[in-house]
Amino acid sequence: MPSAASHAFVNPRPARLCPAGPGPDMSDLAKEKAARLLKKQGSVSSLSSHEVRAKDVFGRSKDSMSTVSYMDEPGHHDDFSRPAVQMENTYQLGPTRRFPVVTVNNILKDVLTNYLQEEKYEAELCRQMTKTISEVIKARVKELMIPRYKIIVIIHIGQLNEQSMQIGSRCLWDPTSDTFSSYAFKNTSLFAHANVYAVYFE
Image (cartoon, rainbow, N blue to C red; front, top):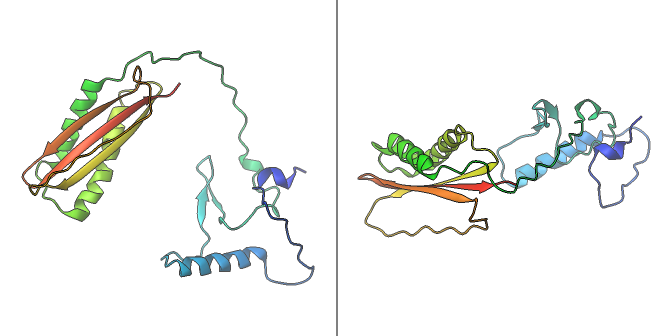
């Protein structure tokens, strides 16, 4: 029988022993405590009828709560153990293919123009559009299949009202392999600025 400690987090405080005999289930006590904490923090979530659903590394859902340890269920994770994968060193210190800055600039221009050309500035709409546009740009850049580059997309959208705004960024990277693309867009109502940072992952 596998050790339960190998499948549970280590608690820095010593465990308290509970007396034997009938009493409330520990998971029920944990649920009640979590529900009280959520209510105290003003959360709209409720744990009274359903437990929090979490996903393991294989995408299957399992019942778990952040306040519950699985030490009393040693076999719970046996079915989900991942085999260790050994990767050989590539000894590759630089990219075999450069990040195509001009191509990504054209993607930024195309996406921002298509999504924002006819839009008027509305705070809530633009807040959602920043998420949508960043996901679309990231997907389009990943379609280029540039190996071993981490992609970071940052979108700013604001109201065009004769104001001045400066956007700055600082990065710790290798200038020989890491780079970025940038594009600024505006119409009669709003402006948008998109940055894509490409960081080579050795």
